[in-house]
Image (cartoon, rainbow, N blue to C red):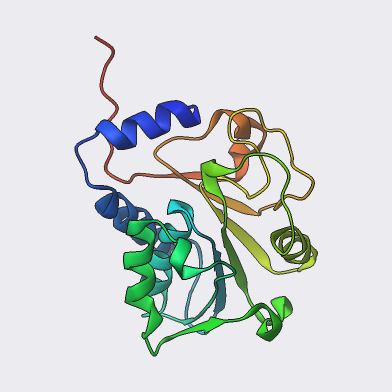
Length: 201
């Protein structure tokens, strides 16, 4: 298991550009889902936000769209996207296989799989609207729920739950399970994104 501080240090010092780690993460999400499900004719909704977790979601959308129908519900502002996430948003923005939807246009019951790529390890404190209502509505859906790295609303170090949180059927976590998610380890698949843990000196 790994803390968020250790994970960030690994990402910063592994010698792999963050844009490559993001590509690896999104492609691995796709590969895991392809192995677990017959993706043909499945409808998938990906819900990303501003951080690297959202970037992973954008990459996954690009790969998944080659196999099935993919919609992206981006509830953020593209001017606030981090550099690598913005680059991957641009790659799907005009992809005719992917629909980017507004919140008003989404019926969560229309999908076979919903992917939470909202917060990842970056969550801190209370979640405010519109994200709080969105996460609540995602939770009410009977759809199969997948989250990228860490369920939105759950502290990755302590497991503490915010005022709202995403309860997943499956967690695809990057590199190693986060310390606060021990209670979810039976639902977790670890994605290899190319980082090698260095032995202690």
